[in-house]
Length: 143
Image 1 (cartoon, rainbow, N blue to C red):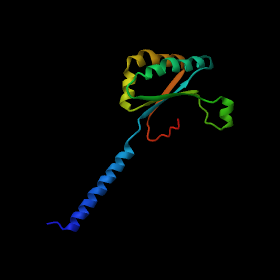
Image 2: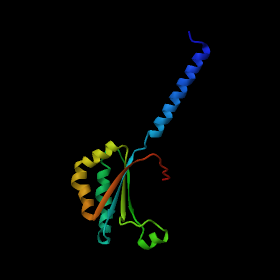
Image 3: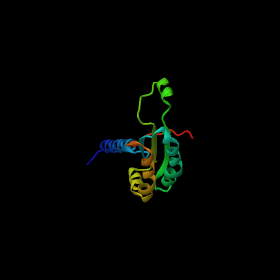
Image 4: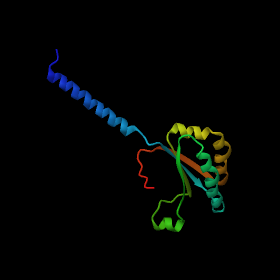
């Protein structure tokens, strides 16, 4: 038969293991995912590319389950980039798409509006595209 002290040790051990499991689970949870796409867009097509983002890409994204936000970012002009000692890049635009999960992003990629309208519009205006996916593990939105 177990003594009171042995039972107390057992209960404390279970509580400690449970707390450790909860901490590990919290550490592996994400706040969604982001896809970063880098584009090379000529100066002649820059205005059209920015318009395409506002008028085609964003409206299509807003229809998608799990879509959270997006940003279109343009690299500073060369002279200012050199002034701030920025890393040289051949890519002058970046689009960041935020989804609640990778599964939601995958559905977006397979959707008709992405396949037939949004992605072809972006590709038609860019010379080069590359992308990377990330888990969002922290954020600090001040807006």
